[in-house]
Image (cartoon, one colour):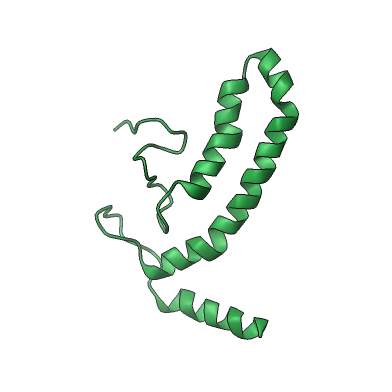
Length: 107
Protein backbone atom coordinates (compact mmCIF):
# COMPACT_ATOMS: atom_id res chain seq x y z
CA UNK A 1 0.00 0.00 0.00
CA UNK A 2 2.88 2.38 0.80
CA UNK A 3 4.40 1.74 -2.61
CA UNK A 4 1.14 2.60 -4.35
CA UNK A 5 0.83 5.83 -2.39
CA UNK A 6 4.42 6.82 -3.19
CA UNK A 7 3.95 6.03 -6.90
CA UNK A 8 0.74 8.09 -6.99
CA UNK A 9 2.50 10.95 -5.23
CA UNK A 10 5.42 10.92 -7.66
CA UNK A 11 3.07 10.78 -10.65
CA UNK A 12 1.04 13.65 -9.20
CA UNK A 13 4.16 15.76 -8.66
CA UNK A 14 5.40 15.28 -12.19
CA UNK A 15 2.04 15.56 -13.93
CA UNK A 16 1.77 19.28 -13.17
CA UNK A 17 4.23 21.98 -14.15
CA UNK A 18 6.37 22.48 -11.07
CA UNK A 19 8.13 25.73 -11.81
CA UNK A 20 6.02 28.86 -11.62
CA UNK A 21 6.82 31.99 -13.59
CA UNK A 22 8.50 34.96 -11.96
CA UNK A 23 5.26 36.91 -12.26
CA UNK A 24 4.05 37.40 -8.65
CA UNK A 25 0.47 38.02 -9.79
CA UNK A 26 0.14 34.38 -10.84
CA UNK A 27 -0.56 31.65 -8.35
CA UNK A 28 1.98 28.80 -8.12
CA UNK A 29 1.21 25.60 -9.95
CA UNK A 30 -0.48 22.69 -8.22
CA UNK A 31 2.68 20.61 -8.58
CA UNK A 32 4.74 23.23 -6.79
CA UNK A 33 2.17 23.41 -4.00
CA UNK A 34 2.24 19.63 -3.60
CA UNK A 35 6.04 19.58 -3.52
CA UNK A 36 6.02 22.35 -0.92
CA UNK A 37 3.39 20.68 1.28
CA UNK A 38 4.80 17.15 1.07
CA UNK A 39 8.56 17.50 0.65
CA UNK A 40 9.54 20.95 1.96
CA UNK A 41 7.35 21.81 4.94
CA UNK A 42 7.75 18.60 7.02
CA UNK A 43 11.58 18.80 7.08
CA UNK A 44 11.27 22.53 7.77
CA UNK A 45 9.25 21.77 10.90
CA UNK A 46 11.95 19.39 12.12
CA UNK A 47 14.72 21.88 11.32
CA UNK A 48 12.82 24.71 13.02
CA UNK A 49 12.35 22.59 16.15
CA UNK A 50 16.03 21.65 16.24
CA UNK A 51 17.07 25.27 15.72
CA UNK A 52 14.74 26.45 18.49
CA UNK A 53 16.10 23.81 20.89
CA UNK A 54 19.67 24.81 20.02
CA UNK A 55 18.81 28.44 20.73
CA UNK A 56 17.31 27.48 24.10
CA UNK A 57 20.55 25.72 24.96
CA UNK A 58 22.71 28.77 24.19
CA UNK A 59 20.27 31.55 25.15
CA UNK A 60 21.89 32.50 28.47
CA UNK A 61 25.46 32.84 27.11
CA UNK A 62 24.09 34.71 24.10
CA UNK A 63 22.26 37.13 26.37
CA UNK A 64 25.39 37.71 28.44
CA UNK A 65 27.43 38.38 25.30
CA UNK A 66 24.71 40.69 23.98
CA UNK A 67 23.73 38.87 20.81
CA UNK A 68 20.49 37.26 21.98
CA UNK A 69 18.11 39.34 19.83
CA UNK A 70 19.78 38.84 16.42
CA UNK A 71 20.49 35.22 17.29
CA UNK A 72 16.84 34.63 18.21
CA UNK A 73 15.78 36.25 14.96
CA UNK A 74 18.08 33.97 12.95
CA UNK A 75 17.60 30.72 14.89
CA UNK A 76 13.95 30.90 15.94
CA UNK A 77 11.95 33.49 14.02
CA UNK A 78 13.34 33.00 10.50
CA UNK A 79 12.99 29.18 10.37
CA UNK A 80 9.45 29.26 11.74
CA UNK A 81 8.49 32.10 9.37
CA UNK A 82 9.76 30.03 6.44
CA UNK A 83 7.86 27.01 7.70
CA UNK A 84 4.49 28.52 8.52
CA UNK A 85 4.17 32.12 7.37
CA UNK A 86 4.60 31.83 3.63
CA UNK A 87 2.06 31.08 0.96
CA UNK A 88 1.91 27.46 -0.15
CA UNK A 89 4.18 26.93 -3.14
CA UNK A 90 5.91 30.31 -2.85
CA UNK A 91 9.32 30.30 -1.25
CA UNK A 92 9.90 34.04 -0.97
CA UNK A 93 6.39 35.48 -0.50
CA UNK A 94 5.23 35.79 3.08
CA UNK A 95 1.68 36.54 4.25
CA UNK A 96 2.60 39.84 5.90
CA UNK A 97 4.56 41.05 2.82
CA UNK A 98 7.83 41.20 4.78
CA UNK A 99 11.08 39.34 4.16
CA UNK A 100 12.32 36.21 5.95
CA UNK A 101 13.48 38.15 9.00
CA UNK A 102 10.19 40.03 9.37
CA UNK A 103 11.52 43.33 8.06
CA UNK A 104 10.09 45.50 5.30
CA UNK A 105 11.31 44.77 1.76
CA UNK A 106 13.81 47.31 0.43
CA UNK A 107 13.79 47.77 -3.32
